[in-house]
Amino acid sequence: MPSDTVIPIEIDLITALEDRGLRKTATRSTIVARIETANDAFTAEQLCRDLPGVGRATVYRTIRHLVDAGALCKLPILDGAPMYSIARVEHHHHTICSKCGTIGEFRDSTVERVMRSLGKEIDGDIVGHRMEIFITCNRCLGISKSGASIA
Amino acid sequence: MPSDTVIPIEIDLITALEDRGLRKTATRSTIVARIETANDAFTAEQLCRDLPGVGRATVYRTIRHLVDAGALCKLPILDGAPMYSIARVEHHHHTICSKCGTIGEFRDSTVERVMRSLGKEIDGDIVGHRMEIFITCNRCLGISKSGASIA
DNA sequence: CTCAGTGCAAATATTTTGCACTATG
DNA sequence: CATAGTGCAAAATATTTGCACTGAG
Image (cartoon, rainbow over all chains, first blue to last red; front, side, top):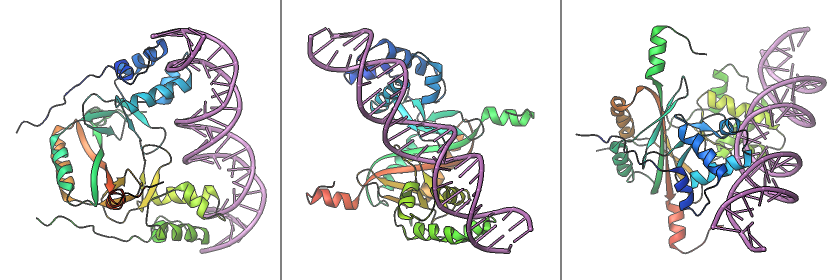
């Protein structure tokens, strides 16, 4: 049984904005470039810090547009500010390393199948779902095995 | 296939606090009583509004204790303040009506099984998971069918 | 009496909004 | 030039902390 591999549908973030009738401006390109080079999920405040020339309000407004466009996922971590990550796959879920906070993503058709079968047990119509898996990532496992400590 | 029904393990919230070495005080009893009569999930701010005699700080501190004790679940809704609900079952997930915001809970062994099988595909050790299912609840379905509108 | 618990107000943290200014089409 | 976009600062929202006071053991 060949389980799904991640299907990368690289959405050009600027295009996602333009598709919503928003202009491609210098500021938005700057923000989007910073987001696209990020390997990890990020917070709004991180973007503001990394882009001192850009107003906080613009950062928040751009993030909101991207989330509305479905190009970014908002991940309300249990404490503190929510993080955002690029929606690289059509529908996916996130893994969050409980040691280092790194966020990964995965897609698995099993989850979707389960979701459909749950429909019978649930008191209403399912319109969506969200799942986060908390892990200890391989890097942290390696680090802890080798005895090194993390700050 | 007999799917799991919800297993209600009514945790006495005050007991949960006492188990952590915290005292049973009048203020905490007030807060806990308000939480226990709630059928729905609630926000910290709602508690403060409903309990004018109790300081905001105490409400937040008590909620934090209850979450730490595992007696309350913190549900970071996508926007706005997080909501809390009593952890009535050992491990469960939440349904959130996207129309009226009502939060329900369910437990299903299928989910747990899937989680275990996902271990193979995931880059690290799974230490936990969280799932929320967005629904249109039966009441809202009924309301929309009957043509009445919601504020 | 001692220290946990509490209320209040101030401090933080996060996000949104008002407004004047800039720049795009 | 009409209007979308922007930066800044203030406002709004959400939560935590400092501190003096109260109350339980």
